[in-house]
Structures are given as structure tokens and as C-alpha cells.
Image (cartoon, one colour):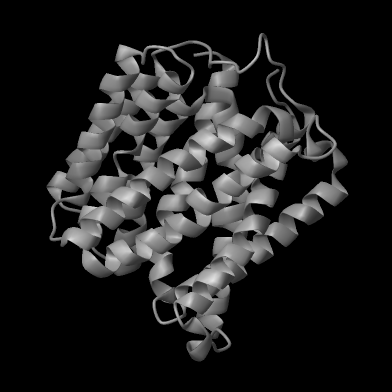
Length: 321
């Protein structure tokens, strides 16, 4: 693995650690209208990302403005990766144990390992498929077993599809727009979608100012889970390709386990610890599978906006070319 791939792997891992650690914190918002809270979160994140683009013009990437095709793809990222993902996740958690939902969504590495190459009309790499299967198996060990009805199972499967589409669609526009603009446009487009969904769900009648704890949680989700994690994930995704980056979603259950253990002051079980070790072995196998990430174009150079995004996330002044 070369230095560029190592940077991508580190950024993907960092983004998934933030995501996994945020799940236990999200429990602090259970009493607040979920769709409304998500709309507020993405609105704040979009404003912060827009401010970054204004303060640091080089973050805008190679293109001056998104084309019509770019906007269509970005709308897909917002629909599947943000609005619909959160809606289906809420439905799944109402009809299934969190363990079931986590195990189903934990199959994302396998989905990306298969669909990424197939969309490029290539054969999936055997090593990556095996590594993804190991990661999925480890995820199942971490989450354990649970109960679910038909609605919960279907909603969990829908959440899995949204998770896969989120990365596949983003990968289509990252080389042209860069990580920051993909994040900013996706968040901005998700706000009206979630607002409409909140109205349909009848959350208007339950609308109230968030408490201090809820406000702090929403701020954390907007800044860390959305702005920082999105920049880390999208930049890493652009460097590794969807199938290799997808394996790092296996970090999520491990990060969730650690965060929940710290928050609840409990120790994880033996099967959960074994699951984390299995996930780690799968990541090592997949990371050793190739020395260079797939490029969407011949000898693609790192976009200035992508380079600046790496600096913003990692705090380092040096980024491998």
C-alpha cells in the first residue's frame, strides 16, 4: 500500500470511528422529533461547509459549478444517503432490535466490493470479496442476534441499499467537485427533503425548542458526524475507490461498541471482542490487496480541493501527491 492509499485508509477509518461513536450519542435525541432534528443538523452542516468554501476557494475543486448531471447525482446522494437512509433507519429501529439492523447494514462492505467493480464492467477482486465477507461476519459477531418483524427486516435492507448507494453515487462526482462541495451540496439538498418528510410524519405538532443536551448533541452531529466525518470519508473514498473504502464501514460496529461501553460504563462481551478482531483481520486482508487505488481517469492527479480537505481533516500540512 502506497502513501496515498495509506492516507485514504486513515481518513476512511477516522470518518467511520466518528460515525460509530455517534450512534450511542444519538440516543440523547430519542425524545426529539427525529426528522426535524436531522433537518436542523444538515442545515447547520451545509452552512458550515458553505463557509469553508467561501473562506478557502481552493476547496471548490476543479469545476466552477456543478453541471446538471452533477446536481442529479448529488440529489441522489441526498435522497438515498441522507434523507431516505435516516427515515428507513428510524422505521427499522421501531420494528427490529438494533442488533438486527446493525448486522444487516453491516453487509455494506460486501455490497460495495461487488457493485463497485460491476458498475465499471469489471470482475470483483477475489481478495476484496473474501475480505468483505470476513468484515461482515465480524460485524454480525459484534452486533449479535435479535428479533425483527417483516417491516423491520425490509426497512433494514432498505437502509443497507441506501448505505451502498451513498458511496457509489458520491464516487461519481468526487473527482470533478471534490469532497467539500459534494458534502455541502448533499447536506443542502437533504434539508428540504427531511423537512417535507417531517411534515408528512406529523412532527409539526410536536415541534419544540431542543433542550440543552439535545442542542449540544445536534451541534456535535452537525460538526463532527457530518462536516468532519463526511470530509474524511469522501476524501478517503476518492483515493481508495468504493470497494476498498467500503470495507472500512466495518469499523462502525467496533466504534459503536467502544462508545456505548464508555457511555454505559459496561464491558463488551467475549463474542463482541472476537467480532472486532475478525473485522480487523478482514480490513488487513483487504488493505493488502492492492498497492494503488482505482482511478476514474488515467493517472488522475489529486484535486487541489481534495488536497485542502485532507489538510483540514488531518491538520497536516503535507499531503502525498
